[in-house]
Image (tube, rainbow over all chains, first blue to last red; front, side, top):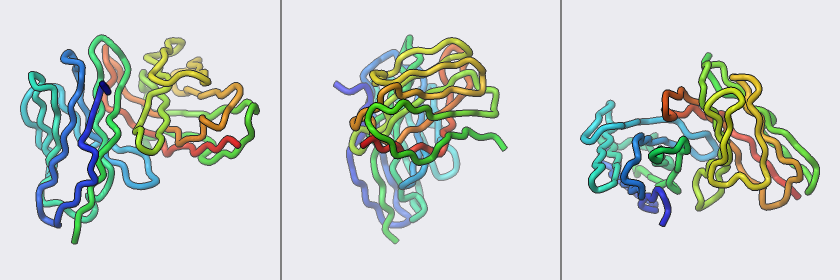
Length: 111
Length: 114
């Protein structure tokens, strides 16, 4: 079982809709959770981080963490064509200093 | 400007010829890390460092070496590159207070080994 798994996509949404991205992780004791956006040919850039159960909102982005169910999700509201990218979920596994990344979900926002 | 720099950005080399990819950050971050990115496999951590002279293996360390003699620099060394090390490499840095925090990535180095 992979440490971090994401829905493989690709995910296509119309402009203005909500894009929902999911990520599950294997280690129940994981502490830190990150979402990165990566445009084609570019380096990943941090969008959100979340450490506690619940929701965290930043502009059009909302991260949701449920440690009991071992998943973290990212919602993109009012999706724009500029949101078209690959989204990477990253998890810091408990008692370790490594970061494990999911394979990414590619999102396309249709104008 | 806060940034992570990598050099070179592109490199084509031959099997067995030693090479070094440099990484430097100006944010005084304790934690630095190297990743490789391959299609369908996502980002995989090669090595990481929690501070000067403290390094540890990530998920795919075979064939790579690192050193951390100064806080700002974290070079990646391929002693004898092989074609399966053809990949896109990223260096990243972050604060570290018992665990790594949000990572800031360099622009990437595209390596081709023939």
